[in-house]
Image (cartoon, rainbow, N blue to C red; front, side, top):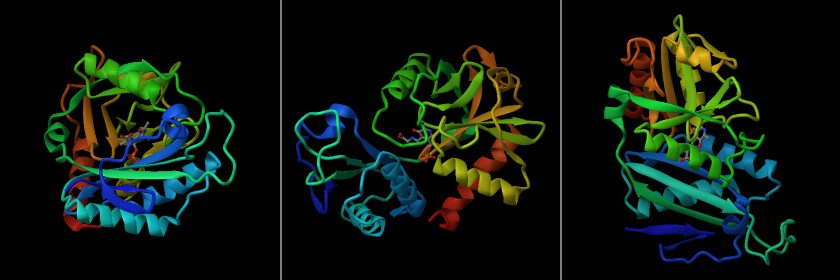
Length: 282
Ligand code: PDD
């Protein structure tokens, strides 16, 4: 089954992009990537809340209520018979004659969503992976999940060319996040992660980890830390939808601690896994 959501219709996935869709010409839109497990979208309410916030911040009025959108996304997963994978969805400001300024109110936003089958990356969670450091050259509203991902794509490309899973971004000395995930370090048993301000995307996985740490009695400090702190950390991991929690063992040519996944990270990986069994991720 290969259906997509196009505005309010579920249809065959053969709809062509209009060259004057503002997503195409300006990256003028917002998106979400939602995990699906056992045929259920995970933490869908949280993703819908973030979508609403992103829309508000770029002054885009969502064409439908998020409860309606939620229902449509669930229907899409069901017609595509998706058991495990992701939903990608985006809302652009719509199709209009190319002008930088926003089109008039007669132009409706365009909503598109599709699903992709993908298995959970449990072996990389167990094994750990490498990351590279890349200067964060993005704009100053990284808290909005917009379609403008060129700096993220360039950073990820650098990671891939160096056999790394992620590019950890830093503005000068300060570590912000990674190209498509959030970054945590562990020092003396406590977690440190960049505060949720305009320099990072407040990941849904990040928020879940902070919540889990509360019940695991692990202190989380939402504070900035430096590249040096990262390199000298006891443990480092990244978090994102689908990736969940991945231990980082090497950053560039530097080995983190003894180069094996750390105990605190392993507890979080386990706690996260048990969420999948408990079905409480919604
Ligand atoms: N990216 N930071 C950035 C820059 C991201 O692009 C993402 C997610 C995250 C983690 O957010 P969450 O836990 O809500 O997935 C942090 C998605 C997966 C993507 O663009 O594919």
